[in-house]
Amino acid sequence: VDSISIVPHTVTKNCTSNQTVENEVEDSKQKIVSQSLTMSNKSPPNIAIIAISNGTQSGQPNPVNALSAHVRQYLQKSLATSLSDPKVTAIVLIGRPDGKGVFSAGADIKEFSGSDDESSTGGVTTSDPDGIPTLNDLAHLIEKSPKPIIAALTGATLGGGMELALAAQYRVADESLKYGLPEVKIGLIPGAGGTQRLPRLCGVRHALDVIVRGRINGTASEGLKFGFLDGVASEDEGILEVALRWASWASTLSPEKLDSRRLCLKTVPNDEEGMDNSDLCDFALQSVPPKDMGGESVHATIEAIRASFELSSFQKGMEAEKNIFNDLLYHSLAGRAYRHIFFAERSSSSGRQLSKMKSAPSVVGSQLKKGKGAIGVIGAGTMGRGIAISFLRAGFGPVTLVDVNPKGLDAGIKYIQTTIHGEVKKGRIPGSKAKGILNHVKSSSDISYLADCDLVVEAVFENLKVKKEIFTKLNNLVVKKDALLLSNTSSLDVDVIASSLSPERRQYCAGMHFFSPAHIMKLVEVVRGQATSGATLEIICAVTKRIKKVPVVVGNCDGFVGNRMMHPYTSESALLLADYGGKGGLTIADVDNALGRNGHGMAIGPFLVSDIAGNDIGYNIRREKGLLSDHRTGQVG
Image 1 (cartoon, rainbow, N blue to C red):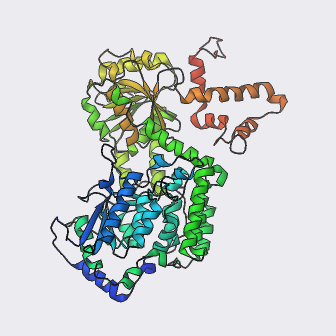
Image 2 (image 1 turned 45 degrees about the vertical axis):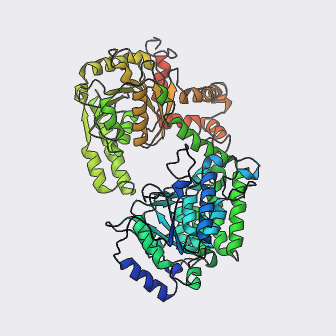
Image 3 (image 1 turned 90 degrees about the vertical axis):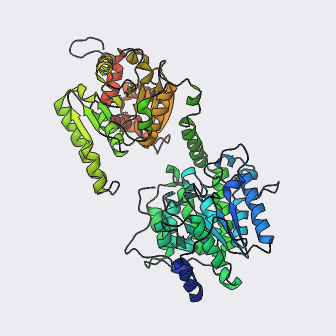
């Protein structure tokens, strides 16, 4: 969904006309924005500052200001106190008291159990029997406030955090802002008014772009352009200073003028580029996956956005959003799978288990964790060239590709260049960045060119003898004694490979198994050998995240985890062809279709997987295990 065109564009326009209020109010706003007021760190006595971070339970780290039950209770109590205090004339809602860090990354997803118990909605839609407010309760409290509430946005303002900001009468931010509604990526839709308020504020076009794509990268300039923001802090003022300035001004507004800022009283505006809102939704539907192919929540978001302008009132739209949200939460198996993946990925790469391991210090590790360092890749074949691209994209360099076959090396370099140029054409990489990336590419048929590398990944074919010879050479030529020496082996014993190194180097050796195509597939198995240190594993996991992949630490055994999972059904697929293929009439396509999307439900069948990954990989694995004989000599292996 990230790469699709949600709605057609003709001319880019400022989509803020739907939030126009009386000219007098807008003129006053401009005067306030242009003022250069100097304010002390202490807020005026008539303005209450409520920091989300202050609601965090003692001893419970909450770096992203997740809106847990404890935080929601704190916000409700603080808002109620400020609203009932006659001395308070305006309220500033901010992430942290000092204006640093994030506003809020949204609901505490751990509260979503997905059971049939309605208390399991993560505090979004259904009130808690113990009186804990939902995000909807807080949003309504903010929106209906008789006193102006200014949301001061910094850093991540996502999901429920953005929905609370939408409920505020005014929104200001600094340049660190990243806003979005990514609920679709965990099989849900925004459930605290996001599908109803955002179309009313910024129009259906921008709402589709943000919600259907599950974006998390909306910037301050984009927020101003589309009307999500009312002001952005300049370089010489902090977010709190700006928010207090707006609060001082807004506290002078009449109740009628404040009502004009409540999105619950507005209707969805017409599209600035002249398309019908319903047509925009229809166009978006043409670009998203079918419901039975992972698109259930995406279709639901479009249905909810459509309700914002098709139903007769805001209240009816909110009821439709609630019903859609709850239906996905309680009944969508795909949604439960998305949330399982969400937690599993974070658990696999959290480093909690690694922190318990005895770690050896590494000088190069700190640089690699920062995305800096010289990388060596041995083998310019399918895997090697993809691994090189992954490191190049992330800004590592130089990246030196080594292969003893000059023709293979030239082909690998050409593939890297073609891939990077192709990504420029698709708009994924700016042309200026692509030039820098390609300047970092080095190549040689001489392995000694890797002497100064901080990290080397061996990616030659699956032959234990060859791999051991390579690691013996690396042991002697790599200068830095704490350089990481890693193998991309998919099945061979990492400890046997590491035995080619001197004892003091073995702690820096591990498996780093990419899946083909390496520059596309996200999973990386980090294979822990007997001598691999905890620090080495931490560095590999950090580097894997840097290259935008998901590290999973696994033990050292035949096939590790991924290939052991694939082995049973790939073997049975081959046996089916052996038994029923040929005259029996069974084809490769029949097997792939039976296991694919129209059959069992896998994305693609096992034979197509082998075609994409390279059939030579499986062949070399079988040969190394002695399962094949040379058709010319009859020799096994």
